[in-house]
Image (cartoon, rainbow, N blue to C red; front, side, top):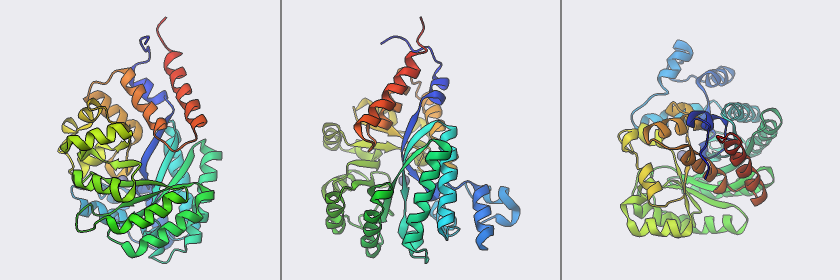
Length: 347
Ligand SMILES: [Zn+2]
């Protein structure tokens, strides 16, 4: 392979990128959150001191604090227009980084349980997705998420996801407390039905719990990719299985550091995941909540782990390769990436 001439940082910025692990509700910037809160008369933590007061709450050290803010942000979303607004703003953030495609997780029952009609949610997302494409040149697909500790809301989530297939819903996800207290077996029939009806199985697993949680996601949910999955390294048989089946991990290093999955970036398992031959994609999870973006994840990891430009290119390619885009579209993006890198090759 010829040497890439672009400096690593410039290559990161210029490559068209795909992001496969990103939560819509966790992408609301504090400025926009205040606007939405004002519109609906909702109060947010620290908001009496304006945007800087709220911004201070965008930092936390525990999962409980994270969840509190996440739910507070969700409570600002009431009507279709709100979902359109946050979708278009997310597309703006993605376009600025040259992220051209994203599979975005939405947790419908967080909103429906507060009285937001499912139809309003679907309509708002559909409008936002269209405007993301038209105004920002960003293509979005949706993953609707089930909370594993709210089994009674799983069925309506699937129903809504199935109704949303024409409007870009491509997968059924699963999140919530990753603990044996909330086993996955009861969700097996639901995920089977989702897969039979064209939805992909994209659960979180292997973030706060170890290999047994990943095995359960594979066995009961038919997981096709893993949200995080970083703790697979604790089981060599599991690693071998994931490598053989090409089940990709959506790895979100800054999220893992913020939520205490690992102590600091230098100790993150990412280099070991890559060395093990696992399929890895880089992602940002809830960018403003973890003071990051997809570009920042590339920049931070490239600097910390001394990646070459070829390694950057290979990870950026993995974002499209493991996406749910049609093969032809994937190939076009991969070719565009190679062209950008190769067009700048030293002569
Ligand atoms: Zn996540």
